[in-house]
Length: 112
Image (spheres, rainbow, N blue to C red):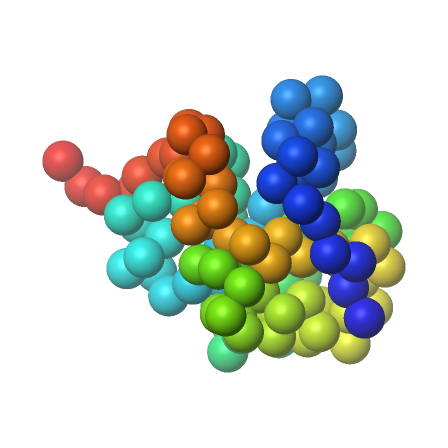
């Protein structure tokens, strides 16, 4: 079962440049519009085929998130990663909605 993180904990992780990977578990169209700084996009159906490529170190900190606490995507991706042997999987359940409401910076992947 993944560990749940608060926005403050995610902010600290990023601010202190701690070794981690943020995973946006929303479909690519949402990820492209807005995601947390440095986040990679990985949806549940692609975990088995892309996890090893995107996350080669199974002991590294991985933080999954989606839109908000009602969104099941982050938890589903976290469970799949744990099933593949990832040992430090965490979930930011409040997600990007909470992040944006706090006024934090986001990135986009939209083509110009």
